Structure formats: structure tokens, C-alpha cells
Image 1 (cartoon, rainbow, N blue to C red):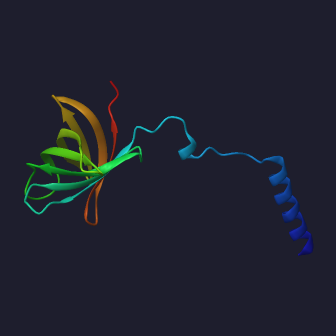
Image 2: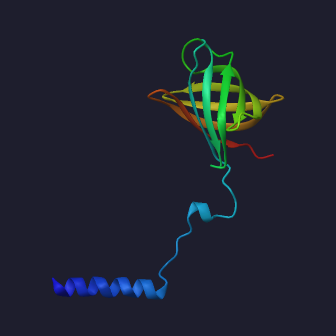
Image 3: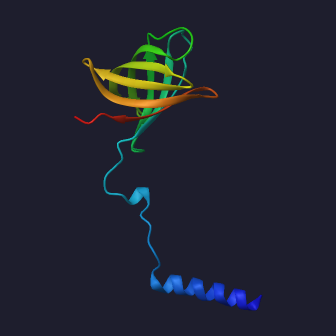
Length: 135
């Protein structure tokens, strides 16, 4: 038992004094990731969704999608997003399509897809991960 503790202590000291291997954390990376996340929940009015979103874990806020179906999530919406301070952020036509047990989402501006994502229903909403489409 003492022998095991001695070797464990020796290994720990060795790693601490040699610098050990370093692992870059996501927060230390130079370029932010082109990844966003949004959680849509049913609004009070039929055909509306409330949104809670983040992009690159830097920008975040709320939003409202209107014009969708009375039941389910799949459909065509018009969505407006706002920053945490309530200022306007972005506006899109949003298409959500059911694909088996999952969903595909497209955010469209002037007829062109600006962002795309995939999602799934969760207990109280539709969770969607997305990324902006490169030019």
C-alpha cells in the first residue's frame, strides 16, 4: 500500500514539474465557432413559437416566430430575433421540416438560405443546433 502511494506521489510530482501535456480548451481557441443553438417553445397564440437563442456563446437573446401551423412544429414561419437588451438582431423566413424523428430547419433571407440546422423535440419544445451558411 505504501509503495502504491509513493509511486502515485512520484508520478504527480513528475507531471507537475515537467509541465505535463497541455490541452487547449474551447474558450482558449482563437476563432469563434460558427455554431448556434435555439430552443423553440409554443407561444400563447396558435402558430407562434417563442425562441431562446445563442450564437457562438457570445450573442444571445429571445425571438418570436409567427405564421406557423396550429399544431406541431413543422411549417413556414416569419421569425424576429432580439438581443438580451431587447434591441433588434435579425429577421428571417424560417422553414422547419420533419425528417423522421428529427427536424431540419432553414433560415432564409431574400430567397437564399442564410443558416441551416437540425433539431429534435424535447420535453417542452424543439431544440435546434444550427450554423450560418458560408458565402
